[in-house]
Image (cartoon, rainbow, N blue to C red; front, side, top):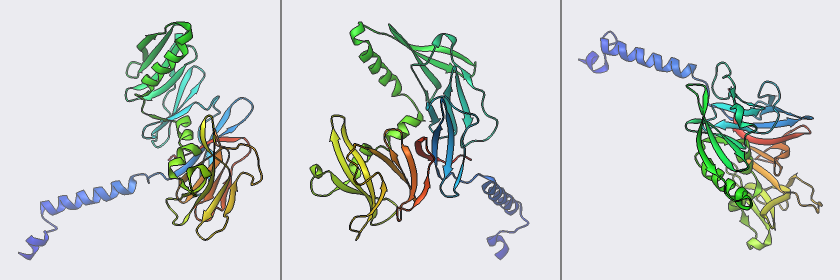
Length: 310
């Protein structure tokens, strides 16, 4: 009776359960570890970029893509499985979190010319063609390796065509499912952090601080300047902890009279900071004390946090 209650290791049910448990353990051991956060950035040369990725946990800095890319027109799919970039008349692709042979590049339609815009939605690749009188949305049919025109909008009088094209493009873009590099950059600009600021006095004072999520009592001491384009967090930027009178200067010059907006973003225990709008002169620091972990080389731009590639 005791053996029946505990489960007889020689019974069919017990053997099946043991095999199932063993298979689960082996599958978990074989599964790749979840990706941490790395810095993707571009290193500029005369007429192209080298895409690189830096892992602050390991300190490794390596090339992210084979060869060089002509523009910063880069995006990831919604789950960061693949990275896409535009290279002439091709949309090139590579695995980011996945693994296997690099997928074949997708040739753009011959009649398209240079895309007015391109992105991914749940159906796949979309590109936009614009001529003086119309806007066309083309869709890549992956199963047939062909393109078809998906939508067309006739543009009206010349004086209103730019405004109409912008409106149509905004509507078409609302269906996208991807992570463009430009969107990730925009999410790190200082004005995207305004809602996090604890102001010193009133909002008109222009100074305050932003608490770090991963470090109690520490954060950024910020200064906000407003112009016709809106509000901007500007240099100098200080790392500040409670009981400190001033904090530690981490970006910009304290005596600078110039207008220098800054971008920043956390990936605990690290902070990435650089100059707007393209995250110029980026550096990675420790959230705990503001110590510099890495200063990126001259010419580094477009630095953002993304999952580390496998």
